Length: 395
Image (cartoon, rainbow, N blue to C red; front, side):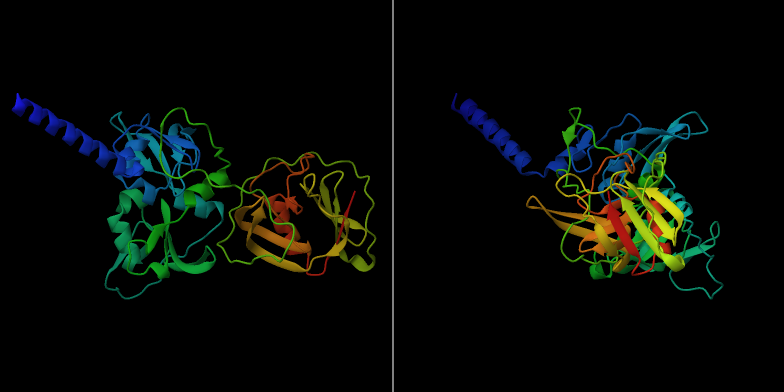
């Protein structure tokens, strides 16, 4: 009887130990062996209906692909899902089965932004360099090592550019484009596992393609990763701007512009063809003039109630091609990266491109005081308007 009790106590103790160890094990690690997942940080699910979850787990998905930013969706007769750093696709094989592959986000992103990469120039062979005859490009050093160790040709495809320098996150970094990704090197992480990482081209391409990345409610899957971050919608109204030099801003396809309102606005009379800008808050429309001649117009979205865009006569006093904006709202810090074609006219009030909504000219006033413009309109205006261009804001 005593031996039975001893055996029972041993079993109970062992079970208790297992439970304690399970409680101490990281949640993310526990999720690796479980079922479908929900990612609160991006608001999307990942499951194995199309084999995407298994592929993500088998290929170090958190590091190489990031979190899902869309649900599974149809794409060119197949099924795909966008992630922060890439895209997965379920494709039909010749034998009738299906397979999961990474999408060609590197090539598609470069084509969408009209990036053209010259072939590698003729040169003597370099130790540790690999030439890809299919694309006439080479890779070497830490890029080649990462490429080989993280999936190689099957995961990243061949290089479509040489190693070059670009602005990334406010600093100059070496980058290289591949058919299915872009790799970037952080010199501050030299010698560590994080020296080379996969860029967030999945998110950038989803924006370019107009993919719906709106977060959805969890249908009951196990949660994985951190909670959703705060998502500000606009630039600060006051205080000096904080200037950064992030990479080239990602242009997002905008909805078709609403019908232009009938012109009942007072024109600005500027003799001698002087350039000037008029923002009409009533119609939510902007006009550009050369003298008395209107040369351009675009829908806008201005300051919401309580944060109205101030009326008055101003002038462009600062221009930033790309800027990271940040501030504090209701006690919470926020940051908006890669705001393109920024032109300050009054304190922290600026005209700038806007990629986080497309409700221009609809009557919806969504900003914290700035003048939101469609990306194409902001780019045109930025190139057209020199420093000192008069800007009138009126009802």
